[in-house]
Image (cartoon, rainbow, N blue to C red; front, side, top):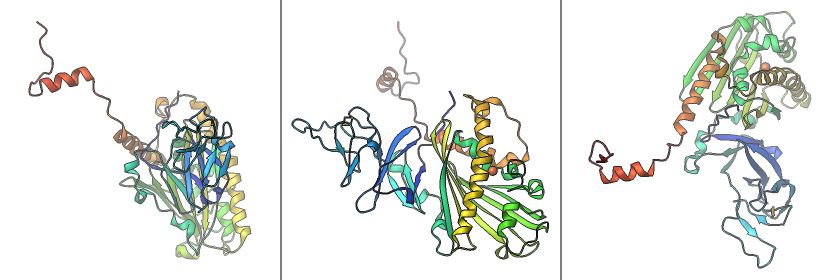
Length: 370
Ligand code: FES
Ligand SMILES: [Fe+2]
């Protein structure tokens, strides 16, 4: 069985803000069935999607006020997952008749959920994606479901030198492939930066750079920020050689990965642009690029890679690395460290702990049998 390897004490994106309404939205996150909706006052709610009675999925039910009515026997649950109405018999509600509820924060056009220890849910640890709401910039986004472990997709995004081969004719640039990867680690953030001066432009960027003639060299940059467990923001663009970046064409690319289960991932993508902000066609062009590049190219390779791995983890196949893999490998190591830190200590053996209590000062808690 593929090792799931989730970091529980972390914020995960469950949806874009505009996916949430007064309808019931179903998601599976870290293998847990989740139901999302908005209350009458607009607040986002996330509760367990399995009815505690007979495990019918609540998303097939109805929203009545701020409560969800189960489609099977009509029990109602409020936004805290508590059963508030039993229409049967004397209406008694057993205390265990409740479903999970998850801390929710709506920020930067995203719905963030916490799956770990509730007292550790600190909204200050949500990474900065405020560019999505910047009034000077324009934004498009969506979500793709990929049949692959989320760390395989992280590897892909922290190693953008795959572009020349996977995205030939769209995001390919030989100069970019040859550029040096700079990796910086700060706390739980890793930067994977490439600066490729005086090189060939990626065709997609040539298309959006008004003053650029095909074939003319450009300065290319791609600065990726990764935050645990798999939240990435890319500052990427081109400019005329030696000219300030502000004169070029650039975007912020959002890549946020939320594991559905060990081999399926929700990939929340976003493009935030600083040009043609009022032209919907410019946003539509990026939607098409993402469809072609992420769904038509990355997804095909990564899902095939997952099929090759089967039930084995990436480490199990003893992969051979080279310089371009430095950032991805650092992220894997950092994440492994964070997962270890959250590991729950094994419960103590009760026989040993009672002996320890009786013989607290003794160097050995085990008494001689004779
Ligand atoms: S399964 Fe939900 S009320 Fe019976
Ligand atoms: Fe790619």
